[in-house]
Length: 126
Image (cartoon, rainbow, N blue to C red; front, side):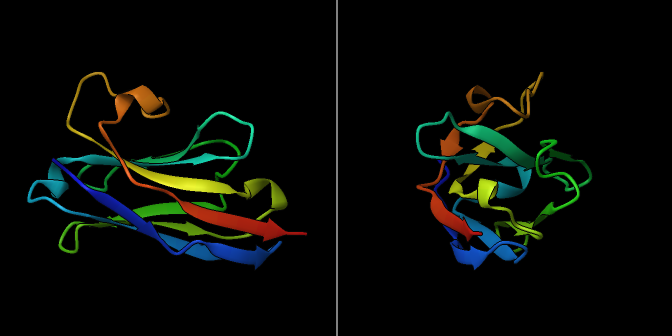
């Protein structure tokens, strides 16, 4: 069982930056692939970024590529999402997710993830 707790959300002006953190419980964190998803009011939850267990491979939605960076520190059981050049359309609740190793792993699908955090709100003002 893995528990995920997100933090770091808040209100920021367009063009600003935020760093989200997701702290995970469990001794096998380093074996899990991790993802960040987001959900705006009235919209479906969508993929933002993901990272393999080793950190060697990262994946991004086109909408955030070049602006967001996902990273992980397995020693701290934490995954991060550095968000730069934020836009009003980035406003959403951001969720951290974890998945046990599986093949195939469809990184952008919510169904590929086994555990979810409670979410942290990010609001970008224009």
